[in-house]
Image (cartoon, rainbow, N blue to C red; front, side):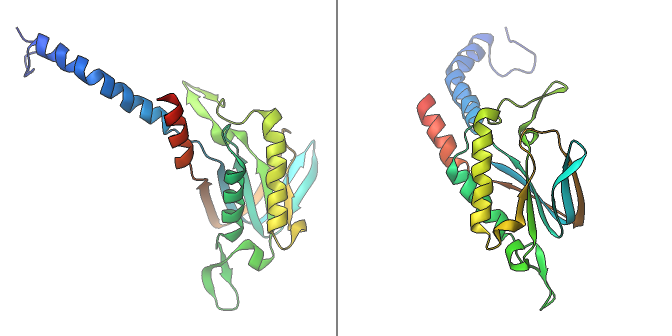
Length: 202
């Protein structure tokens, strides 16, 4: 007797094969869970201008430069912050006006502004039709971490007053004029995090 007409193995053989494969399938599924994104996320937009409003008033604004939305994962460390800071400030998203060469200069070389905005919704996952943000760093931990990220940008930029930010945890209205449009996505490396978590769970 066969399980289905198209089956190549009897029921007993199929059950035996399934039992033998179960540990492998479990490990494979667990590996997939371990490989879920565990990185700081940034969405970078090249702008002609951008501003942040809170309670009807402008709290930060820049002219030409970069609007950077930051998503902080619960496992992020200083290494992730260093990576995002270095990459954002050195991304060659601007034209060299002296040579006419596109994608040749970074925001510091142009002396443009950087507007940082904390956005935990970058770590939203859909559960049915409702977003779930549980992998984002909790607010009480994220607030000082985000403040340290701003300091990193200010220290790394040779024009610290060019780095602005919104208001952490506030309901903000972010206005921008995307220049291009140019929008880039960036994530800090996560391989070491995945390996560490996998070793502790094995």
